[in-house]
Figure: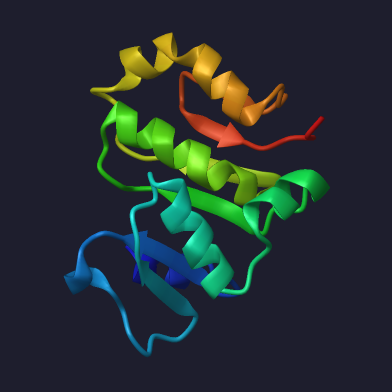
Length: 140
C-alpha cells in the first residue's frame, strides 16, 4: 500500500511503520519504513526522531505537526486504532487529514469512545466520528 500511496501522491514522501520485518522496504524512491508499533508512543517518538522530525512535546507545544496525511491501516481493532491515534495525532500538521481504515467491526466501540477521542484531538471542527475521517483543524 505504501507504493500505491507513492503513485497516488507523486510529490509526497511516504513513511510507514509496521511490526513485521518482512514488509520493510529498502532503497525505494520517496518511501521510508521503520520497524515499530504505531500504537506504542515510545516507538513512534523514536522513529520520528530518527526520521528527523520534531519531538512530540515540541510538535504539541508549537502546534507544528509534520505529517499532512496519516493513514492508519494497522491491526484494525478499536483498541489499536485508538492507541495509534493517540501516538500519531501530535505529529499531524494543522489542516492535515487523519484516516482510519477498516473500522466496520469496531465502529460501535469507537463511537462509545468519543470522549477519549475528543481528549486526543481536542475541539477540532473537522472531526467526523461516523466516517472516522479525522481532519485536524485549529488547535487550541
